[in-house]
Length: 146
Image (cartoon, rainbow, N blue to C red; front, side):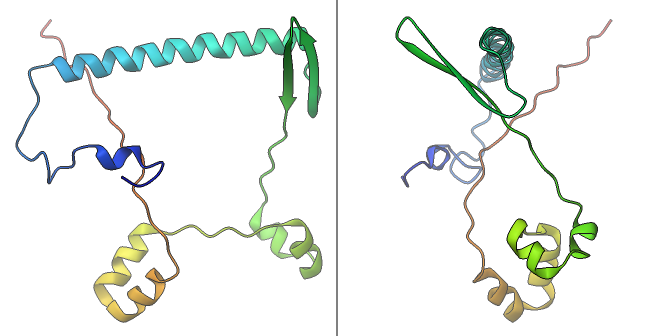
């Protein structure tokens, strides 16, 4: 197993084809775990809010206090999102100094390229590194017969 690839040990449709679910045990386990995570996240969010209120959260930056040997820091960051059209109108030197360009793959367009131009598709793939994403599950409760 590759380092940090916990999902590579999960069974895939090829390795587990036709195994099916063992009744509703897996579904119940997943729903219970999902509820536990949601409750734990709510408790963590509340505890974080309480600590930030006690420590004093700056408009931006970090406040740190020490209590009973613990060093507790509350950090507030500001997220920025650039308007690409407006940034494009800025002086090129200013753009290069202040903005970082990040590329993301448009998977439908990549799939279409693979179907119509295999040589160019392989050339583009040389620019890419891929790895499996964390799998996700969604479960919808059955409708009641009432």
